[in-house]
Amino acid sequence: MYTPASFREERLDVLHGLITTHPLGALVHQDENGLTADHLPFEIAAPTPEAPCGTLRAHVARANPLWKTAGARQDSLVIFQGPHSYITPAWYAEKQDSGKVVPTYNYAVVHAHGPLHVIDERDWLLALVTRLTARHEAQQATPWAVSDAPAGYLDTLLKAIVGIEIPLTRLTGKWKLGQNRTAEDQSRMADGLAASHMPGAAQALGALMASKVDI
Image (cartoon, rainbow, N blue to C red; front, side, top):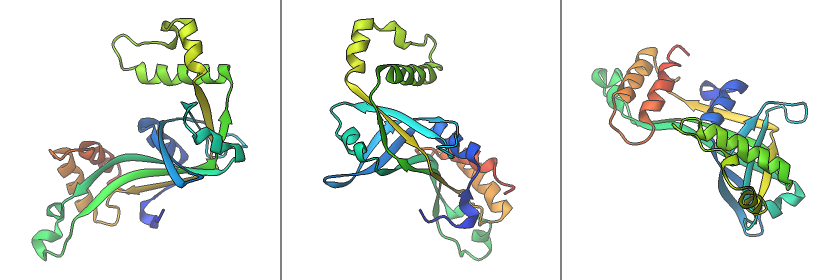
């Protein structure tokens, strides 16, 4: 990924934060047909000596051929998309002065690299789905728990999935938030996005940019 220095984000806690907030990753890997991608909700674990950038974990259907390609422990790439939005040049101070401005698109993304491993162990899978469920159910008024399902039914479903684990060797973050513009323009963009009725993640991007206007 092309990442100019002004847009580069290298703080591990910030990169993990985007993954945690936007857990649906596009897992890009190679199979017999060439490059392919699977969209999976991941969890991110803390760094270890073996995985200095942390570890991604997810699960796939046993019918999904993805896990069979992991036997060779091939390298993989997982792309996480954070807030993003169109930026109108009307928000730039220079528009009123010379008119020499053009639109752009701002966003925050993380690219995660590492070898693809398969975990086909019932207890590991049960622990993973229990953690994922607890996390995503936390906002519900009456959270559902894995233990709410009948044990026999749960065992049948666990046999139908396979675990995926990616110890990360490299994380690349790109926070394109207008850092190449003046502080005034950054503030105007953040305010414009916050008040915007544009679809997508405009307000979330505005909040992210507002937190970065001094960078």
